[in-house]
Length: 287
Ligand SMILES: O=C(O)/C=C/C(=O)/C=C/C=C(\O)C(=O)O
Image (tube, rainbow, N blue to C red; front, side, top):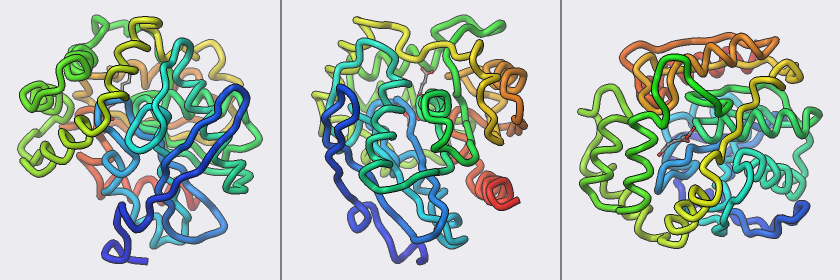
């Protein structure tokens, strides 16, 4: 399958999941065929989705013979909306467990971006028998930073965009998001704004959730030693959303972790350094 052979629309699927107290319709994209599956979990920005976060990373994996599932978390994109009063990392992990059961997938590799990385760690702790290798970018655990005041400037800008979804606020957020904002096109801004405005319910529920529980992403530092999966940590040196010392905390805590830091890179390593990122991921998954 080549890049021209698939699109968001042609790979778009829905599944009804019932997992514990969750009874939801989830949207996902399903690409490629292969004995091994890679799940990609997106971040928590308004308008994010599996496709928006990972569209530069799908093709090399599909061409290498992996099946790729992009799950849109509850409260994002075309998945059902939800108010999260507890740990959103665990909520997403529970949703993923439900989706894997519906799809009959026993064990998967997971690539998680930011919130998606927090959710990957929650999944690995809850369902260790269901994971292969893990790739975590710009996240993996909540908790304090030794160096950067929190909330970080990026997280404050995400909050402002959720409360007031204008093109100006989107640009302010995205300009801090990546190291080199010159690659952000008008088309990208417009597509993202359209995604944001198409689901006001998601925006309202995110704000409601953050008010009910400002710590949506708990600190897993004390449990990282329980995860025995091979893990590749990827960070941007200039990440202004989730600072790099979170990556060092993960490196210290995860027994089988290695860390790669891109320079001239913000919070979107898989997009900002897509080619190198894709080569690293393939090498990590196949050796
Ligand atoms: O607050 C955190 O720790 C996590 C923040 C995020 O998950 C932010 C992610 C933003 C995106 O990936 C996006 O595409 O907007």
